[in-house]
Length: 212
Image (cartoon, rainbow, N blue to C red; front, side):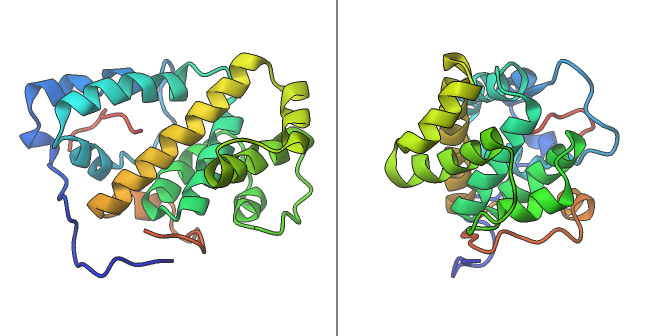
C-alpha cells in the first residue's frame, strides 16, 4: 500500500457540529429508501472532507445518491464494482467504507478476498467477472474490451451498463479526493471491518448521517 510522505490529513475533516446549514441538508440524497442494517458504520470523515465545499457536496451527492439508491444495477453489482475500484485505486478508506455494505448484500469473505486477486482465480459467475474486468479496463483504458462487452451486453441492458460506467467513474473520483486530502479512517470503520485485509495495491458526528 502506497503511503503519503506527509503526516496527518492535508484537508482535515470538519466535524458535523461545525457543518454549515447548506452542508447539513446536502446529505439528503444519500439517505437510502430502506433503513441501513443495524450497526453500519457512519464513516463521517469523508463527509467532513466534503464539508469544506458544501456547494460541491450538494451537487455531487445528488449524483452519488442516484448511484447508491436508484441505480438499475443490483446492490451486489454496485458493491463488487466499488470494492474493485477501491482495490485498483488503492483507496483504503473507500475499501473499508464499502466492506460493510458488501457483506450486508451477501458478498462472501471468499469473494471479498477474490476481488483483490489480480490473477482472477476465483470462479466468478460470468456477469460478476465481467463487472470486475470492466472496472480494470475502464480505469486503464477508458473503455472495455470486446470480450467484456460481449458478457455485459448480454447480461445487462443499456441503462445498467451506463450505471456501471458512471459508478466506476464516481468512485475513482472519490478515491482520488480521499488520496489527495489524506482523509483518515474513522474508528467505527476500522472496528466494523476489523480483520479484513487492506487492498494490497492500495495507494493512498450525529446518528443518522448517511454514507457515500
